[in-house]
Image (cartoon, rainbow, N blue to C red; front, side):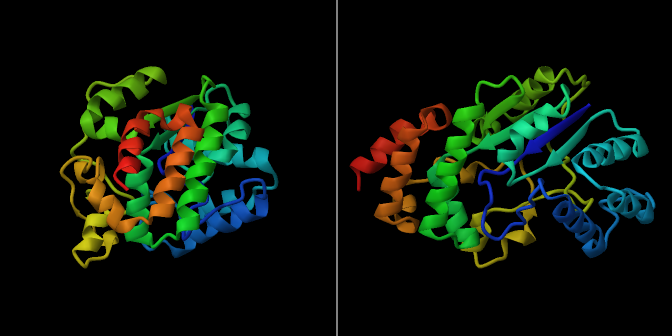
Length: 264
C-alpha cells in the first residue's frame, strides 16, 4: 500500500522546493538533486545509490513515477510507503486516481500561530502569509468530503498524539502493536530534534533543533499580545476574513479570531 503524507501547512511556501509533479523532467531533476546533495545514508538505508539513480533516470512519464515508488517498496520490503509532499496538496486529485490504496493526510494549525511562526522563522511577507493561508483553505473546502482525504488539527496532536496516530492507523487499516512517540528518527537518521520559532527568538538557527520532548505545545494557542506584536493589523484582519470564508477548514478557530478582532 502507498499513502501520501502532507505534513506542512502552506502549499508552495516561500523558500521551499515547489516541485511541479506534472513535469516529469522537473521531478527527475529534483529527485536526483536530493541524492547528489545528500552526504549521509538517510535516503538509502544501506542500499546502493546507483540503484536509485538508475531508477530515477528511467522515469519517462507520470506512470513511471508510480512504478518508481513501487520499486522502492519492493527494494525495502515495505508494506507501507509514506511520502512527505509539503507543498503539493493541489496534486490530491491526481494522486488518489492512481490507486485505490492512495490516501492524503494533511495537518493544519491555527492560522495565526502558523503565521507568527512563518514570520519569525522564515520572514514571510504579509502577502505570502495571506495568500498561502487562503489557498490552503480553498483547496481543503473542495476535497474535505473525499473519503481518501484525512484532515488532522495540530492542536489535537499536541493534546493527545497517541490517540490521533491511532485514529490514522485505524482509518488506513494499518496493524500495530504499540505506538511509540518519544523515539522519533529524523531525516538525518538520528533522534529527531524539535525545530521551532522559539529557537529563533533565543538567537539560534531553528534548524539546530533541541531535544524532543513531545510535540511542542508552545507552538499552539499563542498569547494575543504576542500575535499582535508579530503580525500587522492588516494581516490579522485578512486572516480573520479567510477563516470566515473557509469554515470547513477553519471553523474551530473562528471564536478565537473574533476575540482577537475585538481586541485590536
